[in-house]
Image (cartoon, rainbow, N blue to C red; front, side, top):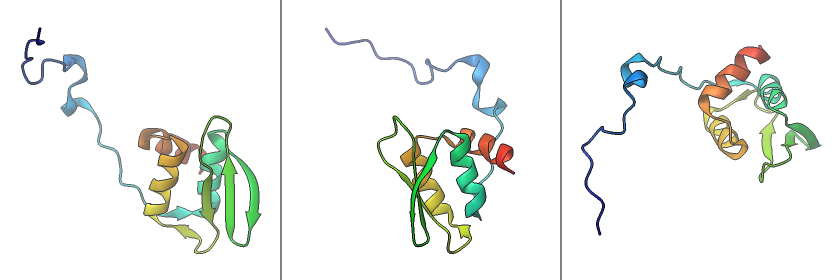
Length: 101
């Protein structure tokens, strides 16, 4: 038997309306040392370095996080890729970033 159709928006919790949430700031390039500190605060440890690449691992995370020391400002695309690999949300990233600075 098919399930009945739901009205659009019927799953929305009225106490968590979209208009009441604060928009997140945009991701911006940060110094590689601050980014390393962000991942360390989340439980990652530096496992090895080769040249200008820094590789960090954390138990339970399938892929390592790789950052470069050159250029000093890590581009937003690299930050986004590492956050995805680490399983860190943007909200959590900004919390850790505030703590790392």
